[in-house]
Length: 144
Image (cartoon, rainbow, N blue to C red; front, side, top):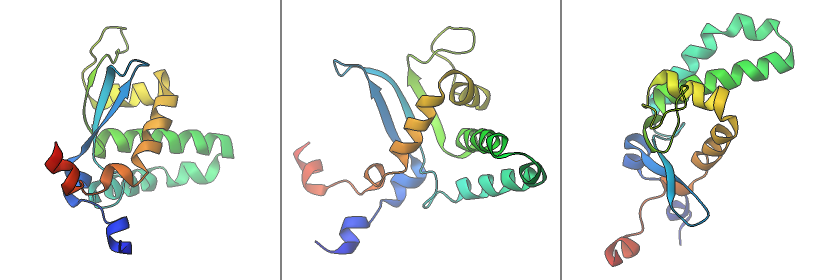
């Protein structure tokens, strides 16, 4: 196997999105998120991130490390809401406790920052691996 094949990614998967599922112990899908790659060929991600960092440059230089970490987390949640999360579904509660919550900018930021920050950490971790972005194995696809 060449190094190219081992590290190649699928342009369409990076820009059109993949679905990341969250399941319960029995394998039932509780919720899913359709996401573009945070980085890679998703140029919109870097553009939005740079814009938000510029907007907060002054604030970032005047706050302590804890406040800076909190601000960076907010910035990333906002960038995900604008340039990564395309849609979601399943049993995702909104601010009012009702589900399903509509996939909006405000709801994404609220879910990731206020209600389920560990979910946001987990989703970032899953999206920052190579696995979701690798080309589909043609042999496996042919069997399906």
